[in-house]
Image (tube, rainbow over all chains, first blue to last red; front, side, top):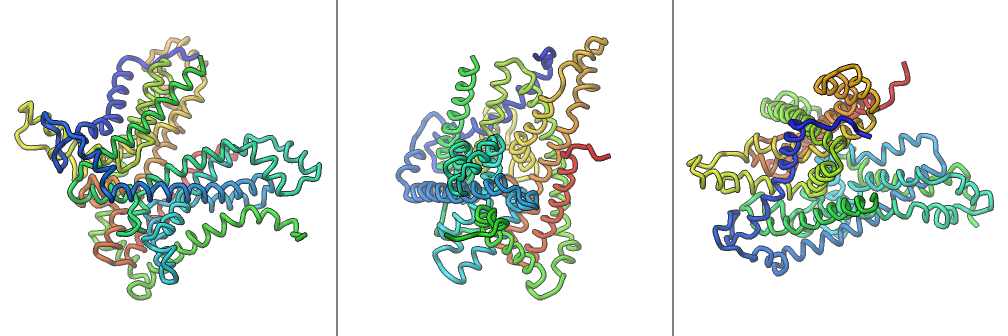
Length: 267
Length: 276
């Protein structure tokens, strides 16, 4: 039970900070309804033309569809690799487990720009040998995103493994289950929510990945964030405001929905 | 049936990820290190250039200065938010949580764009102030260091909140009640008992934000508008705009070494102090 609540002054200041946190998200909304072709406030007249751009303009449709495919592929690949790796660490507790874990988490702790340059090196080297998995191709982006999101998948799956009762695996082993049966029939069913959560989180991370994507794409594999980046750097395109509003509404609905759901469950 | 030696069995599960990262990440990083000592010609001249060229030193210096300011702002504001998130009434807690989590889940591009829409010369704030007749010419709030600091602090605050909030949750309520029972005022309990008890959270948050901020790229590039270049953007520019790959690689290696040192400090800070 908490007895000492924050005082009035602290509450007031924190409310100002809360407004600061939401302000840039709210500022996008009026701009997205401008009838003009440049970044401006609508004066009197509202227009949906920039929302129409999102569903009619070829660049935006291609970008959204490409980002969806890359997200699903790289989240699937990362979650699969991370699940087997975490299982290996958990089941066998190998020597140097800490070191192996450190290697797996490397792309998360290295500065994004260093990872970006590293993956740029990787993909232009590959481009010397083939043009399917290379610089500025969809599969090249999938590999690069997989590297970047792997650590997050490893963390989520390992956390859910830590909650599994080891005696269950020992019982299966004592009754003669092989490695495959232990993994697929005993342990995986117990961590399926962790695996699903990992797929979902890594999908979102790939969907909005931009720092690495700028380095490894140019004109062919233009993902949605890359398209937004181009629009932000040059003449600011209000279609970015429209796509931003759509993304903000989705996130806000998910976060508020979850808050309402937990509140209802606690009651 | 294939027999596998017992000590190799973990490798069936571990090998795919390790091989993948080895090929796609560790080896290419070695390649980047290779660039730094071979381009344009073999030698360490890129490192000596990176550590003596006044232009590059000024970028390093600006990066450190901006990151220090952003760290102080994010940790202070994060502390206030965490206070409400952990110790507010249930309704206040829920509302604070929304103010932390909604921005947290929104992409860095959208958030940087939001600041542009708010602060640029034709943005909301300037239009509003001009409409009220308070200013005649729009204020320059973005495409400079101010914009970079505001945007970066906004991005980092949720990352500062999480470690601080977890430190606040582990504060023993009875210690606060004891201080109250012995006649300490609310202010005194806060400054002399509560803040010291959450100091590890503050330190953890500060290091986390600083490490994140140093390698940060997107927000400075958009809100700085090429005028206040930070180290990550310098690497980008030296690869794609005025190519000098050897130098870009050397700066990356220096950045990686600096971050590793800071992370070692962070780990030491977070690990339990049982070895005396």
